[in-house]
Image (cartoon, rainbow, N blue to C red):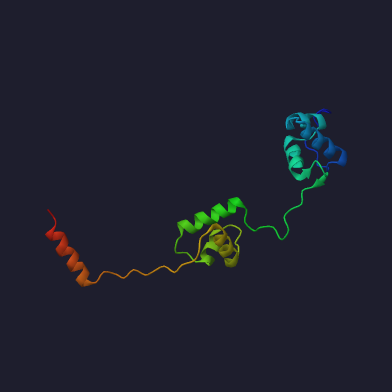
Length: 143
C-alpha cells in the first residue's frame, strides 16, 4: 500500500489530528485538501467538522433524552403507509413498517406530523327506493 495514501485506517483519530482538521476547516481549507494532508478520507473530515466545536474543542452534545425512534426518512415512510392504507389500524401499520414500532409510537409520531385519529363514517348502502328514484331520474333526463 502507498505511504502517501494509507487507504482505510480503522484506528481512531488522535486529539492532534482532530485539532488539525478543525483548525484547517476554520481557516477555510476544503475538505479534500485536509483529507490529503492528514491521510484520512473526506467523509471522515466531514464527520469531524460536524461533530466537534472549534471554539471549545469538545464534541457537540446530543439532545437530552432518548434518541427518536423515527428519523426523517422513517417518518416519510410512515406517512406514505398511512396515506395509502387509510382504513388500516395502528397495529396493521406497525406490521407494514420494517422495524415494527409499537402502535403507541406510531400514534405519537402521527400526532407530531399533524395526523389525528378519526372514526370513519359508514356510508349506508342504497335501498331499493333509492335505486328506483335514481333510475327514474336517469331515464327522465337522458336527453
